[in-house]
Length: 309
Length: 309
Image 1 (cartoon, chains in turn blue, yellow):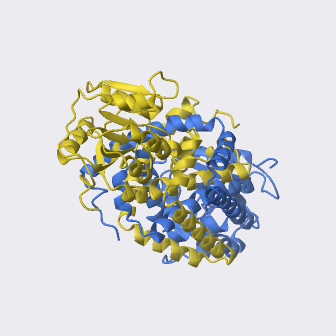
Image 2 (cartoon, rainbow over the protein chains, first blue to last red):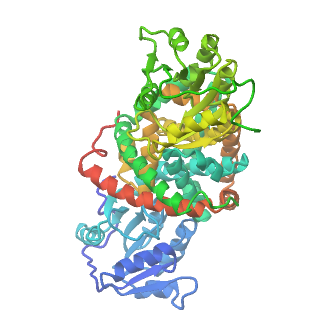
Image 3 (cartoon, each protein chain N blue to C red):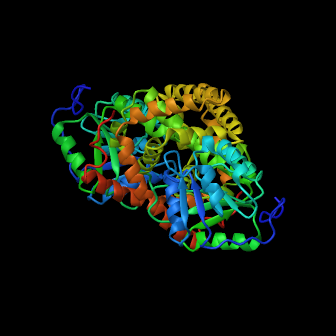
């Protein structure tokens, strides 16, 4: 990926400070608000432009030193493309989108400095401490990037630097593969007419955790998950891998071949390697915690007594 | 399901006590040992028969008042069928298999009392408190079942009574659906040549939990997971539902239809109903805990420094 900190026709010695004015485009959304408040806390003057604000995006961008695009993933590239003509040299552009190749490519059309961001957390978190932020500092001087990164790390955020293409490849696993299978699980439960509350009565701690994570996805924004799983440049590969796997397993099943299945299992276990051992240890701690949590929440009638719609 | 506590040609007024002798067939395996110790703790005399023991299964069964089959799932029905001729009226037969229809059907061929058990926990647990035990008391007098169930609940185990067919249907979700998708995830990661340790650097708390649970499965016995996913009477339905779902999603993907995907997502969310809200709340507590855990384990070099095989 070459030097990720400085590439292309970048401005040479720009500097921003907490006096620099910030425009958050889409600043009324959950993530936009979170980052507007993040920067306000440092003293930055922050202007917000959204569909219902008197301040238009164009105006906000013209008046700002730093521009943050906080728009929904499926509109991000298009919105940035439309607004880039309003940007100018000396500005710093950032976005908060779950994919990085396309939005960063659009931002690079501007003469401004460019850093793509992907917060690996939702807009409803209560603390930044311990959260991860993926960052693509594609066009910014090393000193400026150090300053910007310092703002994040000073709040306990762990910053993972990466190239946009590398980021999207990793997200094809972290997001596409896991969200697709989660959605397949939800769909199968619906398809088979299973009452999820009834299954929870057989709770093993790991099933309870898994099912909680499934429910968590379906408690959230359908548009985000549709875009995340379909707009990744590697989504096609994930679909192929899942299809191939399912066909292989179905073949074993139809042939009654426990052996074929076991061999395939062992190949995957070998690929995952030592990770499985540390995962076993760490998940055991999680399971213990989940047993306590289930006990507490069942006593409060939090889970089992809710009805199934 | 009629009266689950008493059915068929059951003995009328049998009683066992902590003086009753127990034979654990397969008593050297993890689960067999766990239950042997469970009953020893109450003072029961426990004999163990396994492949390497001087005591044969036939001899153990002839000498025992209570027989517990603790054999691997893929051999359970066959083993029980072979040994049932050694059983007699007045005995109590139990098994510890992850599926219930087939093993219970084989045990019912005996003139003895029959209770099918499925511990919803692994053989390596450190406490019974808060664990769930699914139980099919298919042929046992109400008083005897109350006594037996009392042994389990006195140790903090939550006993979920169910009919064998109902149990296996629930397990087609809890085990087949979740384990199959987990194995598909592991297979896809291997297929795409992804280094899992590298993806963990982008850790969001929910990805870390999900990936820990994937690793946990692959740290365990391939034979168990092969049998669990392939021998359930409803496995075929799960395969069909997954295939149908994957085809639907691929169609949306190929057509670039975020809308179709979102509508499908909303249908599943509606089916899961209020569960999603409580799942969101409980998983948020889990995520917070996972962040702390990750911090602790990363500091100890538990996770990120392991190599990928």
